[in-house]
Structures are given as structure tokens and as C-alpha cells.
Image 1 (cartoon, rainbow, N blue to C red):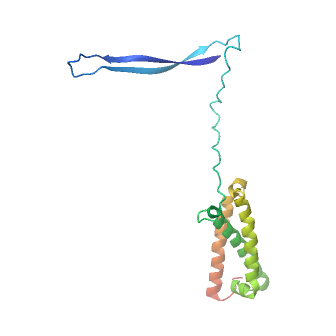
Image 2: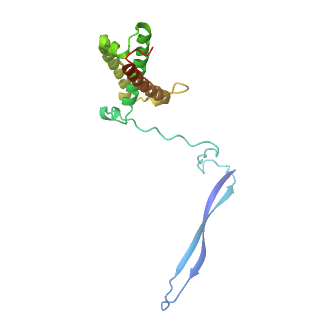
Image 3: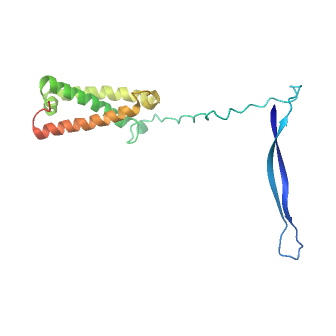
Length: 181
């Protein structure tokens, strides 16, 4: 059974005065909405079908995703998506490779850099930077592809920990003068 809404305006108070008095005419009205049940019509061609509202317990649709800027200056801005993510990825690779070389050869970080580590670092940095920038310039963000345990937030936190770990490793080896492992 369908329902229709009826709006009624009801006068509430009316003050009338004469021109010689200092009061004015004031009319107030209250608007009320009432719902009435409507019997279904047998002739469907006379009344158009009204769209049915969604059920009361369904959540509203999510808002549309904001447009992502693919401008070079926006992607590489201080608060942009690229700098921290790329630096974190490089730090994760750097920390793991520095520890692996220390375990296998016994060289500290500074010895690794001075014995040919700079070209490997530059090559790795270029490859990872380009691989990280290509999706950003296409408008794809890491947040849209992350789910489960491996989220974009977990990558950022792991990158931050690797940045701190790499600095702490270099500082500790500089102060002690020996490899950490």
C-alpha cells in the first residue's frame, strides 16, 4: 500500500490593530506534514510509478574518491605520496643488504660504501624510484591496492623503521669503529 504526503498550513494567531495603535498585523502559520495511505489504482497507466526509497538499515553509498593529481610537483611535494614511500623502500633494501653483506663479509657500512657500493646504491635507487613513480603518474595510489596484512600504512611504518635502523647501524659502527655483527 502506497502513502502520500499532505502539507497543511494552519493559522495559529492573528493580531489585528487599527491604524492609530502602535501594534501591527501579524499572521502566524504552522505547516504540518501528514501521511495518508493511498489505495493502489487498478489503472497503472494513469499514475506513474514512484521510485522506491532504499531500506532504512542500508548504509549510504560511499562518497566518490577524490581526483588524484598526477602533476610532477604534486607527486614529489613534501607532503606528496612519493618521497616518504620511495625513501622507505630504499631504506628497507639498504638495511637488509647492509646486514647481509656484514654477515657474509664482515664489512661495516662505511667499508661497503668505499669498496664499490656507490654504483650499486645509485642503480638500485634509480630502478626503485622509477618503479615507484610510474604508478603515481598514472593516478594509482598504494592505498587503493592495499588490503589484509600488507597495507600501505604497514609499508610506511616499515620504511620509517628501516630509515631509523640504517642511521642507527651507521652511527653505531662509526662510534664503535667495528662492524655490528
